[in-house]
Structures are given as C-alpha cells and as structure tokens.
Length: 295
Image (tube, rainbow, N blue to C red):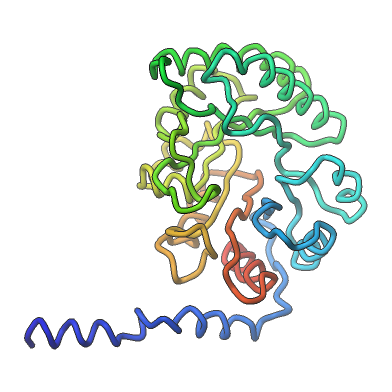
C-alpha cells in the first residue's frame, strides 16, 4: 500500500470523522435518565463551566443525577445549596491572577483567605482554594516561591484552628486559546513545583489541588504522579484534553483508569467536574461525565 492510499484511508476513517462526536453523544442520550449508582466517588462540579445555565437549574440537575456538591459558585448561594441538599466542595478566595507571588498582594490575599476559612468553618465546609498568582517582572522564581510560602504561612494557623484545608491549584500556562482553558504567565504551572511548596508548608491543612486536565498538559504521567504524591493531594478536578471539554472518547485522558488509581490511594474527598460542555444538551454532558466517574 502506497503512502497516498494510506492517507486516503486515514482521512475517511470513522475515528477521525467530523460526525464521530455526534454519534457517540447520540448513543449516550438514550441513557438520558442516568443516575449515579455507586458512592465510591463523591462527585462535584465547578459551577462556572455550565454558564449560562441558571444556578438553581444546575444545582437541581446535580441533585437529580446524584452529584453531592458544587463549587465555584457565589457564597450568597450557599444557603440555597444546603436546602437543595448539596455540599460545597471548595470555597473560593482570591483569584488566580492576583496571588502571593507579589508581596503587594499579600494583604488582600490574607484577608480573602481568612474570610473564606471562617466562612467555610461556619458553613461546615472543609476546603478553600488558593493560587500562586502570575509571574512578575523583577521577581525571580526563587523569590516568588518564597513570597508565596510567607503569605500562606500567615493564614495557616487559622486554617488549622478551624479544621479547614487550603488547596493550592496548579494551572497550565500552555493553552492560550481561551481565558479559562489555560493561563499563560501563571507561576504555579509546574505541578512538581506546587508539590514542593506543599511539602515545605508541611501541614495537613495545606494540600495540592490536582487538576488532571492541567497536569496532563504541563507534566503528564498522571497516574504515577497520583500514586507517588497522594498524601499531599486534597482535591481533584477533571476535564477532557485537549479543549477542556467532556471527559469522553474524543479526548486523550483515560479517566476510568485515572479514577481507579485515585480510589486505590484511599482518597475519600471530592472529585469535581470542570469541563466546558460542547454537546447540544449540557445536561447530557454532565450525565455522561457522572457515569464515567461512577466506578
């Protein structure tokens, strides 16, 4: 078989067909009433990803499917979420752009982290997110790391006292196609660096937020990293790569194997969906994702 013939076969292969994703989606829609069957994985969702779906509609959908929590939602909705019967898996704080890399941000970061820790404690929630912030001209990597550690250590006593865990999120800096698919210039874009900082903090109340999507883009070797560092991980996010879409067959991460590896470490916290739905019916995307994690 010559090269031209081979390329012709590849170009017409069903695996590369533009309609392939539609076929797989349609096949799943037949299970439109799917509900989570097992409780081994405590599934949550990052609320912003399903915008513009109204909050109440998304919360009720999560409850119907069997998810147990939400995150990335305004704190004003926490009371309503409790009434619906859902937990908050991660409380927000300062944003990823203005983090402790720059000392001029420390007072703001400390104030927001302390407020979030207190709120989490009052509401009975256990985790608060934090970020490094962006790289800054004139601040070396070594100094940026030192600045971050100094800031976090100032709020750690409160977190320990309240029984709340700060979760440092590693983000990818490679994808510049969308403001929430990648974060060029983010300091904590190397998961090994983030793990190093978590280990230097050396507290059960300061852990890594292991976002499988971001780790796959920047570092890879996802399962081995989980197995080697699970005791330093306090939270997980999942999404498909490339594109931060559904965790289906149209992306490269083998999520059943990844989730199984997480379960085998003894992890009993939340795993939050943070994919941006591309299917015609976003609710079907979430049902499908819930089924993938329902091991």
